[in-house]
Amino acid sequence: MATMQQQPEVDTLANLEERIQRAVALVNRLRQEKETAVRELAETRSSLSQSQEENQRLSNELDGMREERRQVRERIERLLGHIDELGTP
Image 1 (cartoon, rainbow, N blue to C red):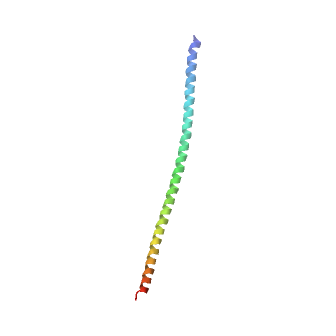
Image 2 (spheres, rainbow, N blue to C red):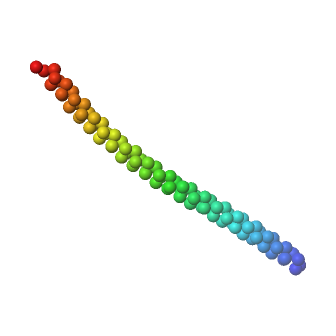
Image 3 (cartoon, rainbow, N blue to C red):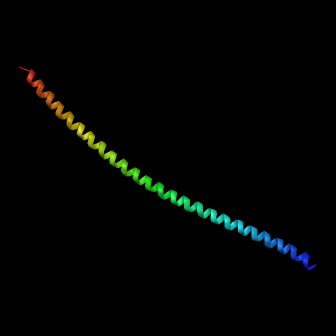
């Protein structure tokens, strides 16, 4: 009779051991996934920062070109005004 009672206990222990091993494997997998996600987040933030810096640089460059175009337009208009003065008697 003692062996009949030991068998369910052994099955219960084996079942518990299997469940614990699966839980440990799941925790390890989740930790790896978290590390990967944290690393990807850091890379994405770095990329975002670089993109924002590039965007700012290009915006400043565009503003500079617009100002330069405005100045060139004014100079050309002045030159055309001088040419018009030459043609009037």
